[in-house]
Image (cartoon, rainbow, N blue to C red; front, side, top):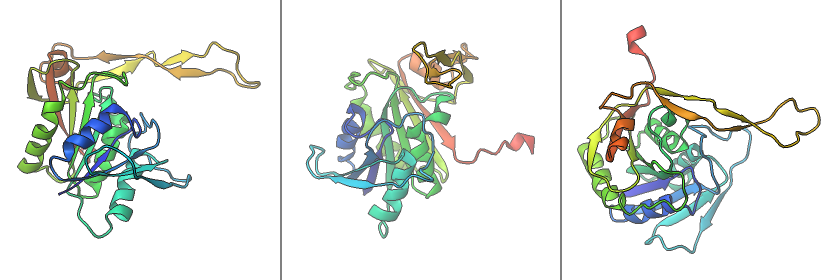
Length: 247
């Protein structure tokens, strides 16, 4: 079984290292990841910038093959399909473990989920893992026992064509698993003005900030609700964005 592991936080972060090690229990793992953070890149690709690939020879990832690129997570999947496995089948793409939630509208911005969507476009089953904490040293040991069990179950049950699974974990002890839908919400107050002196001719500068506003806090079937109740959230997402109700 050929498994490709990718992320958007960059090679060497705790999340992808744990995920890669755990996935070696299911098959042969090939890691291909950005050489640094690519959070918020969604399914973006490098249109005008050349993409370069390096192989990491020395690592401790249980016999996995490891590659690093200057591209995006979406680029990583394209390289895996066309260069690393041109004549072999990729059985599964597993993306993450992302440091930070990809629940609700965050999935739209997520490079973690973007890689899964590109995999789905290529006909490859894909699962994305995230934990609701951005700290690089977040405690992942509560999540570790679920990684292989849940991924294997989803794969063996069958992942429908053009569908991916977005899995979000709470921080701390996980008390169960819940099938969920995306919570309806939005980000507010997203631009924090830069206070230091600006370059000549620049009108204003900002850093991204803001807070997520849950528009349905009483709903008990959403990914946000599940994490708030120490449950592992599994949300199926479709590559087809058509709003059939409007046709």
